[in-house]
Each structure stands twice: as C-alpha cells, then as structure tokens.
Image (tube, rainbow, N blue to C red; front, top):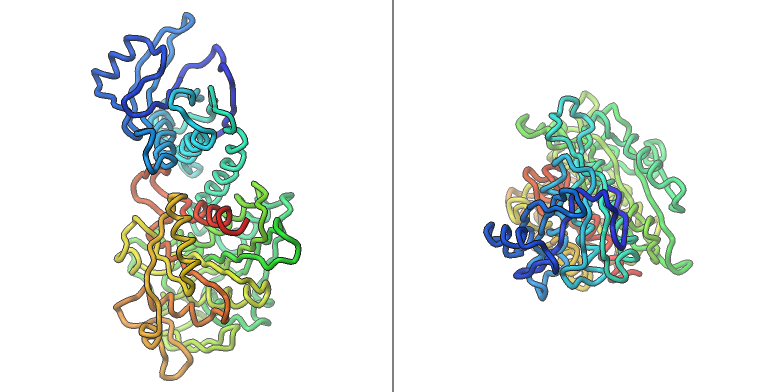
Length: 485
C-alpha cells in the first residue's frame, strides 16, 4: 500500500475515515452521520467502525468513523494500530482503491498518527498471487491511502515505520511461499534481490564451504533433499566502527517432512513455514537496513530442506558439529536444533558477538505451553531476557520467558555421544533450548525465541489476515532501537 500526506486532500475523495477517541465525534460532522452513529451504538471502542454517506461539495462521499478507544489508554499505540487495521479490514476488498484518513480528530501525536498508518498498511497485505479465479468482490482493491491533517512529526516517524512495514511484508512473503517456490537457494536469491543497493553485505556459504568448516549437524539435516543447503549472513554496519555486532539468527527449514522420522500427513503442508525464524531475521534486517539503523547488526540464517530419501540421515546416526561436539540423532524431526547449533557456532566464530538471539519455529511443545498468544523466550542472561520481553510488549510481538538450567541439561545427555537431539516427552521446548545452550560460548549473552505458534495464523488477527503474520520483525527492530542504537 502506498501512503501519502496532504493538508487538505483533493476533490476526488470517495472514502474518508476519521480516527476518533471513545465517546467523541469529529468536529463539524453532519447531523445525519452523528445521528446514524448514535443509532448504530458507535462508541469509539477500539476497532469499532461506523459507515455512512454524506453530500460534500456536490458529490456523495463514503464516511467511516473508526474507534481508537480511550485517549489515556496504557496501550495507546497498540489501540491506534488496531484502529488503522480496522479501516483495512473493512475496506480492503470493498471496491475502493484509495482511502483518505483524517488524523486530526483524536488529539494524536506524530508517533500516534504513524501507528494508525502502520496498522492500516499491515492489515491490507494479503498474498493472492497464486489465486487465478478469485471473485472480483474478494480481490484486494485498496491500494493507497492519503493521511489528512497529520500532526507534526508524523512524516518523519512514518519514514521509519514504513521501513518496518516493508520488513514485515518481506517476511510474510517468505513464510507464505510454498516449498516448490522457496527453498534454500531461492531464499538466498530473494534476499540478494531485496538488499541490492542498500549497503548491506551478504555472505553465502554453499555445501562444500560448510563441509570444510565441519558443519555436520546442519548438512546432515539436508542430505536427504535434492535442494542444496545454504548459510546466509546479512551484515549492516551502521554503528561505531569496529564495535562487535549484535547477531540475530534464524532457523530456515524451508520444508520439514520430519525426514525418516516422518510426520503424519495431515497438517504436513503447514511445514512450508518452518523457516519462519529465518524469515523473521531476514525481514528484520531489511527493516533495519532500510531505516539505516545506527547499530552494527548481523542476521544469520541456516537454510535446509528436511526430506526422507535413501541418503537421508537415520535415527541413531551420530554427527559431528562445527564446535566438535557429537550429537546422537534419535529423531530426525528434531532437526531445527541441528541447523541452529552449527549456525550459532559459526556466527560466534565469525563475528565475536557479545549478544546473540536466535528465532526458530522449533517445537510444537511451545504451542501446547503458550498457545498462539506468546512466543517462548529462553535465555542465559536475565538482563537480555528482560529487554527482549519489554521489546516484545511494546512492539506487539509478545514473548514469555521459560526456564532452562542444569536440571534439564541432564535430560539430553547421550550414552554414546556428547549430546542427543531429543529428551523425554516432557519439557520438550526446554530441552530443545538446553541443547542450543551447549553451543554458546562463555561470556556471550544468548536468548532463544521459540516462535512456532506465532508465525502463521489460521484466522485473521488485529494487524494481519489469515496466513503469515510477520512475527519477530518488529520485536527485533524494537530491541535494536531500545538497546543497541
């Protein structure tokens, strides 16, 4: 969606939306619209929409009142995003091509107004490129918005927010694509195209390079697939010269059959989004680069496809990781941690970060624990955990901290190798995090974000339609803005 700004609008406005606080109406609103809103019990609650029509300058204008809730709400920003999203949900397929949004009726600051626009843009996104017989009334028609009466500072804030929106949309595309279109090599190619000319530096490792480095765990996951594995690093040096970068790392299993430990067929089609962690990191890096973040940041993604084949690894195989630790692979469907452990070690060796945060759709167990309301957060550093939790709360990508520790560590000791890749049935998300913790060097602050329940939605949410949510991008951006820049 294209968003522009105007002081007065133009005479060809056909759809005009007012953002209003709870219990209020825009000044000068036509009596018939005010009476209609009262009859429809419009109160200005968050996301509530009333629609009417009015004659203005000799033409009929479609007028919407959109509720932003209480002006003094503790979640004012989130409520305003929902108000903007409500405009999109109502009119995205309405036949209207453009909407004018009046931002002067709710006492908004520049940041407040930008939040409305962000919600509007994010909720308009939908991925229909493979739908060739979609009925006209179901097609997305809303392509642009004009912000009217925007408060001072809105355009400057929106410059950054639009970059974040671009990052979220890039992640959604990656997550939404089917596995015959998105696989390790094509993931890299899409990133190369997206970052071209931005000043970011991309590094790609192919299978011979990873084999030379000893990445037996990552390569073992992909050895049953015809699609070659890749490791991709995206570096942005926007901070002090020579300062160690903060590293974000993502699991990129572009399709996960479970390998020889084959998943049940029902629902396996969902495993195209098992690269949601890598998608989040790539999208967040795009947002940070586009808004020229004043920080040194690296995004690393391990990209594989996990398939059953005569060459696929077997339950009981032992692989040697880049760190030198050996892993007994008891379940080939616990593959994400095998990808991450080599990527984590490589990133620490390559960039010497003080802080590293990984994102992964790692376990179904985290969905059992937290549902689809929070991602699971595990960390070896309390301060890092607190900062990520705070960033999640303020960005809307909410995280909930879970425990790790020596009591769980013994559950993944192997009798014939250094470590086994699964523990018992209980505490599945925790033992997965505990596995990764063994590959973190002393002195490195590390957090693991298990976002298996968050990257895909079976029903529309506040700022997304059914499908890919883009979860993680805003969390990373907010964390960088609050703690790294």
